[in-house]
Image 1 (cartoon, rainbow, N blue to C red):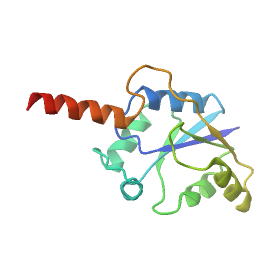
Image 2 (image 1 turned 180 degrees about the vertical axis):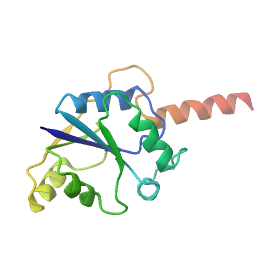
Image 3 (image 1 turned 90 degrees about the horizontal axis):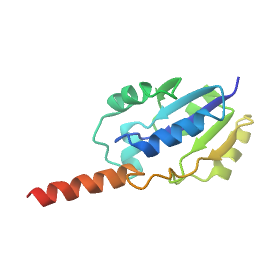
Image 4 (image 1 turned 30 degrees about the horizontal axis):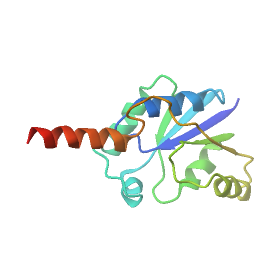
Length: 143
């Protein structure tokens, strides 16, 4: 069985997320999604609208997802070591270095491959930032 691990904040779900998760699922038999903790999101400059438990519950309901969990606070590799994925997928816009992740996995004794998923080719709303910006513009125009 090939276990694929995808990670993210998953605050405002959109078609880019659907693409990321469905493409990740195609790479293996089981898709495990790790939802970032609120503290992790904040540390990385994100300010989610939904709390971590709500985001986790939303992700659990998505069709490609076999299992979803909250990540560990502070150390992403603790979650990796506990779940031993065969593949870790990264979204096209995630600022992680695939080679560094793969190297750290090797240090931990894991033969994990890291794969960057392509960008969603839809015309609009490919990221939560785009959705958030459009909402702000709509609100501003109403004021």
